[in-house]
Amino acid sequence: MPDPAIRVRDLVKTFRVPVREAGLAAAVRSLVHREHRDVRAVDGVSFTIERGEVVGFLGPNGAGKTTTLKMLSGLLYSTSGEATVLGHEPSKREPAFLRQITMVMGNRNQLQWDLPALDSFDLIRAIYRLPADQFRQTRDEFIELLELGDLVNKPVRNLSLGERMKVETVGALLHRPQVLFLDEPTIGLDVTMQKRIRSFVAAYNQRLGATVLLTSHYMADVQALCRRVIVIHHGRILFDGALSELAARFNATKTIGVMLKDGSVDLSAYGEVMSIDDERVTLRVARADAPEVTTRLLRDLPVADLTIEDPPIEDVIEHVFAGAAEEQQAAAEAAPAEAGARTS
Amino acid sequence: MTAPAKPAVGPVRGYLVFYLTAMRIAIATQFQYRVANYFYMIGMVAEPVIYLVVWSTIARQQGGEVGGFSPGQFAAYYIVWTLVRNMNIIFTPYGWEERIRTGELSGMLLRPIHPIHHDLGFFAGWKFVVIVLWLPIALVLSLLFQPQLDPRPIDVVVFAVAIWGAYLIRSVNYWILGMVTFWTTRVGPIFDLVFTAELLLSGRLVPLSLMPDWAQRLADVLPFKWTFGFPIEALVGRLPESELLGGLAMQGLWIAIGTIGVRVVWRFAIRRYGAVGG
Image (cartoon, rainbow over all chains, first blue to last red; front, top):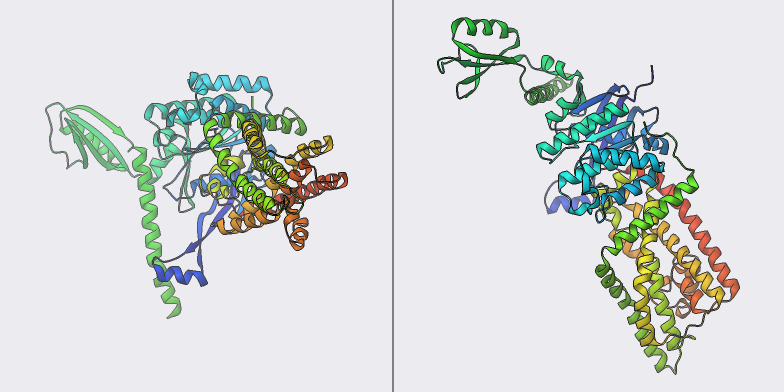
């Protein structure tokens, strides 16, 4: 069995940031005495990703997703811990490593602004020393896959955000990397454009067997591409497993949609009414109670239609983060009491 | 179908292809902004014209010469100055802050080629646009100020090499200076100090032979002279052959020192990179 594409052990990244209060007095004080504090952006993260896997890396803003991706792509040095990507230590930034990876950052322009994308693609060919025939074949294939058409002949500055993102994506993959770090690749794009980028990434993964680590706040990206997700919060991993398990682990509820034959009836006795839309009522019930509630609904009422679903993944993720925040607050409240107990 | 672990061509050919492509891209980019480039160059010409008018006036008042320079020689010095100045334009150290803040540097770091090659290639390409735009400006200045310029073939050859040497010296030295940005965010005052030293000790403000002896001795041990004064004086024809060849050797030495400096400082600087901009 080949080595995993990405192996991370106890990875830590601490940033030293200046601390200064607001106001003139603080500004004057900072002239003679600068204070700093250490912020642990990534706090002992470990995971392994096999070759060809597509993994969603989820977390709220500031969770440590992008910092982790930057360490894995060689942009940042870790404070401690180990990381290997395709057998390389990313921070060494060896050309043989950089030739096999890419990182796509949403809203980041790496193409020549004033020239058509085709010119930038030529520069990429020169940078990666690609054989001319392989380069042309890949370029034309990607242009077709993303339906870029004549857009590659227009100066990049004249393209819309979505069009630019598509040509950026092509530019980032022309050297056919084996590992893709995609950091919010669809941010700011409309639904159609998001879908096209997703399809392209999926096709790339299938054709080349590439490994993909994706961060996105759009759950549609994650659901379409990733069977496995890693959830990170405050620099620590909260969950690493199948996307389908995430709901089971972190959400103890099911959603039951009910439509009755003879109009609406108060269904609050069966569960928490989440919404009433025309004649359709959506209930939230405990996962364990779902079979029994369903049986009661079918027995007691003239049901025209009934569906049982897991809650939307966005709600599950929100629930995970809310739970983590509560735990952290509880830990913070407990800490002074413990400290007090030790010193009294 | 996966990425080749090794590139298709060797490093020498690879760098050659890269530089030629980067220069072609730079030329195409700069020709997009012909008018802006012209105004930029006209603005840049204002500086030597002021020096030229001042020194020519002083020379006439002192009986036709100042420190061995006649008005015609001053004209030659400062017209050649305009070309040398344009040829040694490099990526400004002030640009590092933006490069870091906008995340541009992150994109460069993801490529399997040192970012300095991008700057060297891009600005080298720009020179060809500059030369095309400079020719009519030089013609007008020559008609106005009647330069006394009679270079030997060796002067022309040394000048042609020296302007590229000057470009490389400035590139590596200001790369090192720009990397100070990794340690402290507001670096403008440090850069201003260095640029002032360059202005005084390079032959940019005034030919070095007109400076006091101590300033000339100081200029000899600093890199600035080899980026302005030496290439200009090589063409103006005031240097013996030994000084011409010695000057090229000094340029080679400063390029070597700067290259080692870039490698050493880069190694430490990149560890401090926070990639905050993306």
